[in-house]
Image (cartoon, rainbow, N blue to C red):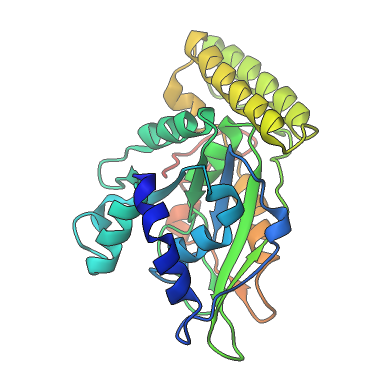
Length: 289
């Protein structure tokens, strides 16, 4: 699939520089030159994935980027442009109706194990003007499962000329987990504790690895070892895919919010969604991608 993006990139770049879009990118010095890493961005329009891809050009010369995308795009829910971008980039499909969260996480980990890039728009849909929507839990679960750098981006239309602005922040890692989940059966609880401690230790190690080709290959190898380690534990992969804590989404959302201009606000989490979220003190709740 990626050869299609490479083929169309000059066309995308020419359109992005046109008077209609006037793409400007800041923070390109923060982009790792090699995968694996996770890109997290807000979502304002159907062209965001193109703007993000052009902004990440230093990393995408030889590396495939896999966006998460709702399956309805393939069926035409976002029109011809949405279907074209689906075919151009190749995606990790998210099916909220069928609930394929475990499959999405596993496919994302497979991409990261290969040293590739995963792009997530955690809002799951386009948000209102000057508003950063609430984040669905899939990105936090992926971030907890993989000790890979997370690169925050903000995409928006500039007030002064209406052009597209992409601000790239500094890569970061998730902090250590604060709580163990106490409501699990004892065997699975012990397995989760082992996995959690292993990932946190490797994540702290990964923070100090150079972002050159050798260092990023080492991180990819570590993700490979973690997945193999989980498969050998007395713990379901589904449980492994739902290890995020209640504070994790806001931690990630704050990193994106910092890149947005003055005057933006964060949307509140709808009550019905807040009830589904895990609680750090007991780990209860269902999470979706």
